[in-house]
Each structure stands twice: as C-alpha cells, then as structure tokens.
Length: 500
Ligand code: NAP
Image (cartoon, rainbow, N blue to C red; front, side, top):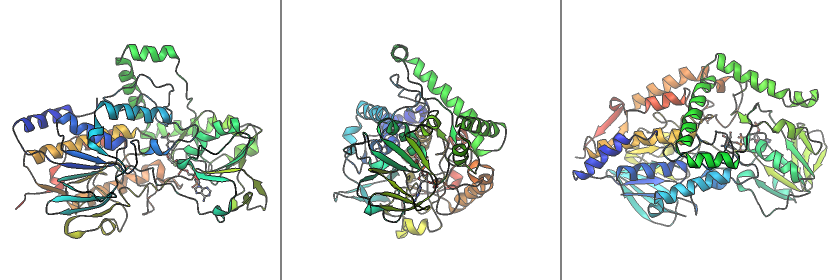
C-alpha cells in the first residue's frame, strides 16, 4: 500500500487529544478527489466536502465512453494501492470497468455523504485565513484548506478546421460520444491519431461500411497486447486476494524499470525505440508504412499501446488519409488535394486542453492575487502541488506532475500523502497558514529546466504535454523520484505563518 498509514495514526492521536481539526474543501470527485477524501476518512477527519460539477463521480472515465475505451496502464497497477481489484477482465482495463471500480470504491468508503454533485466551485478566495468558496448553485462555504482535484483531460479541444458546423451528418468530440448515432454500415471519419483515435479504430472498423482515419501526424505505437483474462484467472484472483496486490507491485516495478526511458537517454530508450520500429514492420505495404512512420523519436508524444492498430489500418474497409484536411463540407471532408471524402459520421478525437487545471474556477490568493496574475508566465507550482500567494492550497495533478505513461492513481496517492502531512502539522499548530517561498519554486524550476532537455519529450515533437510556455509541462524525472521528493515536506521551502 502506498498510503502513509503512520500519518493516519498520528492524526487519529491528535484528534483523540482534542487538537483542532481542519476543514478541507476538495474540488472534483474524480480519481484524485476520491483519493483525498479516502485519506481524510482513514485519518479520522470528517470535516470535509467534495464539490463535483457533474451528476456522478469519475472525471475522465465518466466523460469518455467511446467504443474501445481502455486505459493504457496495466490493470492491476491502475487501482488504488489499498483497493486491489481481482475482477479486471483484460490486461489493460476497459473504461466502463474503471468507472465501475471507482463507483464501488466511492460507495465502499461512504464518500456519498461528503460529496455534493452538480455543484461546481466557481469562485475561491483566500480571505481572513480561510478559503471562501462559492458554487454554481450559489452555496457559500469556507475551510482552512482547499484541494483542487479538477483533473487534466476533461476540456475537449475542438479542431480549428473551417466549415466544421456545416457538416450535415452526425459529428461529435470523442469525449462527448453520441451513442444515439447509428454507426452500423456507415461511412465514419475519425480525426486524430492519438490514443483515443487508435483505440476506437478497431471497434468502429468492425461495424462501419468504411472507416477513414484523418492523420495530421503519425504516432509511434508500442506493441502491447490487451489479453482478455479467462474466467479461471478471475476466479483465481478472487480466491487469493494477495494475487492482485502482488500483480500491482510487479506491474509497478516493471513500469518503474522501463520508464526512465522517457526521462534520460540510454539502453531503455533504445529498447523502446527498437520495439516500436519493429512493430511498424507489421505494415506490409511500404507506402502505407511510410505514411505511418513518425518523424520524431518513439515516446516523444505520449506512447500509444496497441497490438491491433496496424492490423486494423490494413483492413480493406479502413483508409488512412494523410493528404491534409482543407475544410469540412456538408457531405464530408474536403482534402487539400481537392478530393472529397464523403461521410455519414465525423468523430473528432482531437484531444484535450491539459493546461486548464482548476480553471474556469476564478481563484484569488493572498491580497487578491488572481490565478491569471500568478500564472501570467504559464502554470507553475512547487512539485506540482503548491503555489506562492495561495496559502493552504494544494493541487493534485498540477503543473509539472508525472502524467507521462504512469498510473496517475499512484501519483495521486503520493501527492495526497504529502498533503496529509501538512494537515498533521496544522493540527500540531506548527502553522496556521503555509505557502511555498517564491525562491523555492524558482529553484525547483531551475532543476526542471536542466532536466527537461534529457527527456524524450524535448526531442522534437508537439503534443498535449506542451504547455503555453512552449515547454513540456511534465515532471522531468521518474515517478520514483516524485515519490521520494514528496515523502516529507521540506519546511525550509515554505513560509509558515501563525494567525495574529
Ligand atoms: P491527443 O493525444 O491529444 O491526440 C489528438 C489528435 O488529434 C492528434 O493526432 C492531433 O494531431 C489531432 N488533431 C488535433 N487537432 C487537429 C486538427 N485541427 N486537424 C487534424 N488533426 C488534429 O488526444 P487523445 O487521443 O484524446 O489522447 C489524449 C490523452 O488522453 C492521451 O495521450 C492519453 O494520455 C489520454 N488517453 C488515455 C487513455 C487511457 O488509456 N488512459 C485513452 C485515451 C486517451 P497532431 O498530433 O498533429 O497534433
């Protein structure tokens, strides 16, 4: 288990001693907001509330329901470390099973009692030593601590293609999949070649008359088969509860071994490149293979996991279109060559704005400092968690957190462990208000700047990893280092204030 049980015990003792208990407001009931809630409950802190903008939990796994939706992290590792799931049906977990898993955990921990649905925090201000918030329903609330668990991949990006609204067939973004639209026997176009587009190509190709994939940039694809588990396997996992936990650690160790490939050059990076390039040999037609060959290093864009995509793209009823989109017209997609690709359905798998963080919530820190002012030079935070001028405020999945091909659940557990330690110190009355020192943030970003050039993301490509500063907005080290650096808060990096 990755959760820090010692901190839970320490907080329980402090509660038993009658120490002050902080109130905590959490924004978002996705995977990381739930993790925060569970940590609080495990420590015995019940004075918290989770505000969720939608009608149910799940964040990205609620919003994405497209055919073929699968997580690209192995199943047993894509769980809370303290809630193994023996019932995964595949090596990579399908989206609906993930949503069901989170739902089960949500109810198991009784988070229902602490969550207010359909209520988005629209305004948050730090005034008189507390976070004062207002929600979309007009609720006013306040707390000593505010935690943003707003997620990263939930603001769909619509492509800036001329004529989009003239299309007379059905058109929708992949994260707003319209299941009422009949797909059987239709001519379907998919714009994009990211994980989402690649995952949906196979199921779409099985039912469509013809499926067209509109590629702007080719992607590297790591050959990883999504094996279906047999019922015997699932029974075994259920009968011996230690097995899913063992697999959790094996899969975690495997990723921890392999993922240095993305943050520093060396043998692993060469192995990664070799496997992706070898995988591309599955494409027999040299013209198609050339079209599918990226002009950047494997891993520079987020690696796609699939061992079926190259088979799918070679099917007679599937076409890779690389001529470039001129515009959308009522009948379909007009290419730069002048050719019209007639379509019934157009699916925009064009990704997300991963740099909004807690926006559009308007936020004001000390002295009325707005988030826009604080982030005028781009989103910044100390180790992705805290910001100067915003006391007692924490972000989960904040800027420069390790979102590259790792389980974000583990990342959320490390980050919430860190927050719990601050809460313990607050209860010990070591501070009333805590903010990172600007010089600590500057020193952190100096380290980031010197590490980024070694990462694979800096080797010459563009992706959603890149933030408004033109740099990858990622943790440029291993997830293990994130775990290590967040073990104990370094108080020298913080300004601790006591109320007057
Ligand atoms: P993405 O990786 O950002 O891909 C967007 C695609 O749309 C790219 O191929 C992009 O082309 C293309 N595109 C954007 N605007 C375009 C335009 N105007 N004309 C033509 N093409 C355009 O988005 P995604 O596939 O939704 O994946 C986003 C992330 O979500 C993934 O990297 C992954 O982390 C996550 N995801 C995860 C899972 C999972 O298993 N956990 C599943 C799906 C997605 P360019 O490359 O040329 O920009």
